[in-house]
Length: 125
Image (cartoon, rainbow, N blue to C red):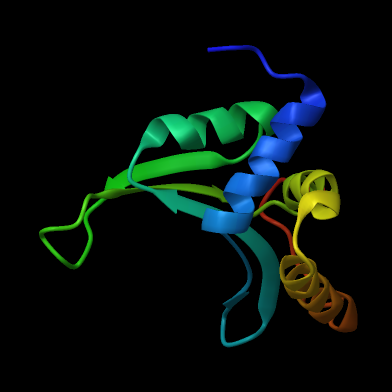
């Protein structure tokens, strides 16, 4: 496989995230804690490993069984540490659609509105 430049890799990652990714606000302890989370779920681990290797953060879990026995088990790439989420989002953002950018802005705005609730994973500073 041809080596990609850094810009090509980020552009590729943005395309994958745009089509398969999810950026959410995770809420714990009945709303006491909230934090942004980035996830991508796929039936093949190799694509997720490539995404992970571009940013060198996050974890891959799986394969997870689906509710339907005729569906392929899913691998899940996820990032929940604030600095790691910001690292990825800051690089992908310029390449994302307006809808995706709006989704990200909305979640980050909610975090800014509730800074006392905006927590980080253990060890994240």
